Length: 297
Length: 321
Image 1: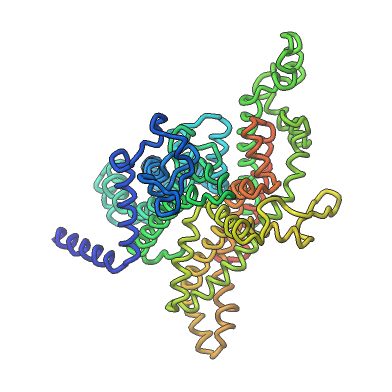
Image 2: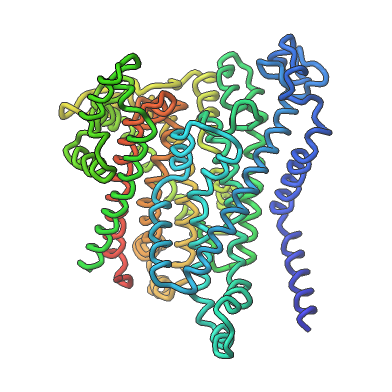
């Protein structure tokens, strides 16, 4: 019986999905970008961070369809002779790595903290929620920037951690709100009444019933984390210069904009936008699907 | 009501103490004030003297207490780089940042709310659907990309807008250098304000639309229609007033975000504001400036949050904590 219901639900989910051409397109775009990032070493004509492969003679070449464009530099090259297309593939690896790590770490941390804060309440709850309010009232960009700037060190891991410091908050708030209503449900009371331990009640009954809104948060957050990494790298406090990042490509290309070398910025910018926009489209669709009441943001 | 406001103010003060503690750590432990003040070639004895003068040999809590005492008197120390009192340095730059933030916020509020009302009144309209997707694009574009794009289009290709700076400014009230009183100043503020406000506008647009749709389904709106009131009157007098509560909360809460983004915007447009100062101070390890900036931003954010909470309690009689 339950299987059947699940099956029906799944097909409905699927049909709803197919009916939204924007969401389908978004998923296709993300899949292509993800595969491109994953197989970057295979696809990319050049390893842009292998100094031996760079040739200054090829610096600032325009895209291949323009006058002076050269094979295999499909989208042109930057000032050091790096192939833009290859650098984008490698750069989006960093984007995906940061995005996925931030979502997973923040989700587990924030989700766990929010779950217990909501279920047990008390001092722990107050402290967590006040911390959350405080963190929320400052901008994530500012907090991450200060952390990275003040410690004057940078690596992919530090960037991820600097984002997580303020990012876990929204997961905690979302799941806590959900837990507060779920814990009054009869099945939770029943579980407590038959002598189930708190942990058992939390993990077997409360968690599965309050976790779905986190999906929406995660989809939005994925995009925000990617944007944040790009912004930090753009400002020069994010990913170290020896590693690829879309934000850094744009920052470096900025100096050549006046000289009309638009491709240095246009293609990485377009990739970044496509990535975040697709993620937002999917989260928008997920929100309508999971919680039709909340259509606010 | 009084108790609620009192509690919020108390919470604000606790937050400020926490932030000041963090700022103190940045100030005292990340930079080396002794090295900076005594100079690189100072003797051991000279260094000890400076250490004594700064109270660095005192216990931790005494140092923190002194830091707070100085901060209350407006004394945040000297910039390592320019050797000027930090507070003056920041206060001089603050008007530029505040003007940018206010123009951006005004633009976001006016456009965001009007578009939100329009879309909620015509949900099936083609323009509405276009705006909904467009607003999603608006929150998907990183601030720095928008700024660069605008500079490229309006300054480099079309050549009709300046690329950087504040333009002509006028000093009012002796300390406030304003760019909003000259035509040139307005020309300079348009692109950065749009860059800074765009994300905010898209967000307010979506929130207004959501709140309006919810309110428009309420029974008192049906009553208003049934009474034969004109569309305009129903939309603005009956619906919008009630839908504005979440919008106002958002405006207040998002101001902190705006300050964060303004660092990026100021850096792109070389806007001579506090955000740009912070960024440069960070590159130069000028920690007193960074620490003071953090405290001042926290102060602004906390005051705004308390005001939002108070106005929220006034606007919505249902909520009395």
